Image 1: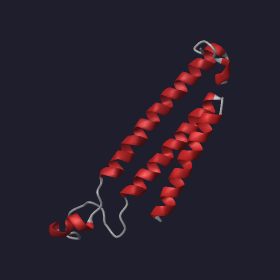
Image 2: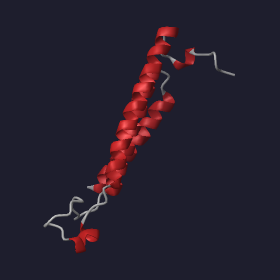
Image 3: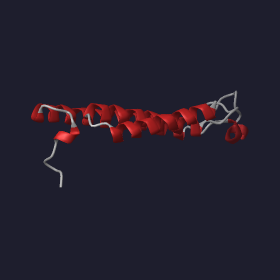
Image 4: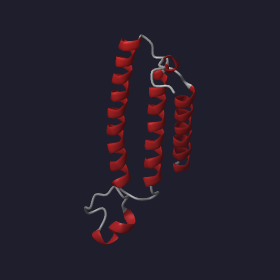
Length: 118
């Protein structure tokens, strides 16, 4: 199960990078970055998974003496939650920039923006 999640995550990362590098439409590039971000989140969650372990809640089900060998480290899941929030903020910022570019130039084709080219 973990291998499937990792492979799926890496495929999503590669699809997102390919889409971001080959598209000239800014909206498609933003969607590609979001797909790559989702792939990174899936890989991080699959790296933190350990078979046969339980949630990090100390109660009668998991004695304190066995806690280090029977519970999962919650840090990867917390990092993924933070990465989801940051990814949402970055996507929102990119969409706001794309909207302003469309208002200013009337197009979202990146090859039409020649002001900053050498």
